[in-house]
Structure formats: C-alpha cells, structure tokens
Length: 154
Image (cartoon, rainbow, N blue to C red):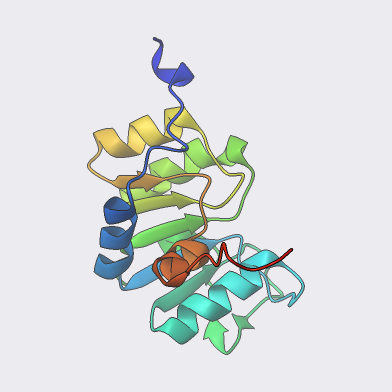
C-alpha cells in the first residue's frame, strides 16, 4: 500500500493519547483565535485552564494576545521549547507545519478534528515525533471520565 494511502486517523490507543497528554507541558496552537465562538478558542481556554502552557500562533499582526497570552506570528518566533504543535488549519497546510514542527524540535504533531494528512504524519514520525490527527486534545483529555449511562430512557 502506498504511504499516502495509509489511514492513520483511527488507530490511536487510549494509552498512546493519555501518554501524550500527560507528557506535554507546552502547546503551540497554530490557528488560535480570539473569537469566543471559534472552536480553537474553547480548546485553548480549556487546555490553558487545565494547566498547559499555551502558545497561540496566528499571523494576524493586529492580534497581540488571546486570553492574556501573547500571540506568536509563527512557530519559529517562539522563544522556548515546544512539546506539542496543535493544528487548527486546513489539512493541506499540515505537511508544511510538520516541517516547521520538526525544525523547532517539537515532540508531538497533533491535527485537530478534520485536520489530517498521512504524508505529514509519515514525515513527522520519521523525524521522531508522535503524531495524532483528526482528534481533539480537549475531548481526549476528558474521555477517561465519560461514563455512558445506557440505562437512561431516551
């Protein structure tokens, strides 16, 4: 099977995801927004309130901060080590972002729900990064606490 045809979206074990979320401390969020109606804002808020150091990345020169957190224009502008690069951009941009994540020494490349590119995943994995695509860290962070109540009436 050609490398580009491999579907990696659904093969993450709960242990793999939990290990990533336990081990990372600093998360650069590409595509972060200060618009409270955007999903990226809510994910940034929850991850920040949970204790992660969030580093919003947005090229808009008029956007100085989100929730009091300084905004960076690019990954290479970040002045400290980054554990995880979380991506809220179209999947077509993921390969270039993977290259940037490798260049800054990130440990994890995480594509948000709907963001995936198997070529980008293969590139990042070959450089030693852990990769998650088409998932939300906010959802995965709280998944162990979800208890289905199958006895409830509909």
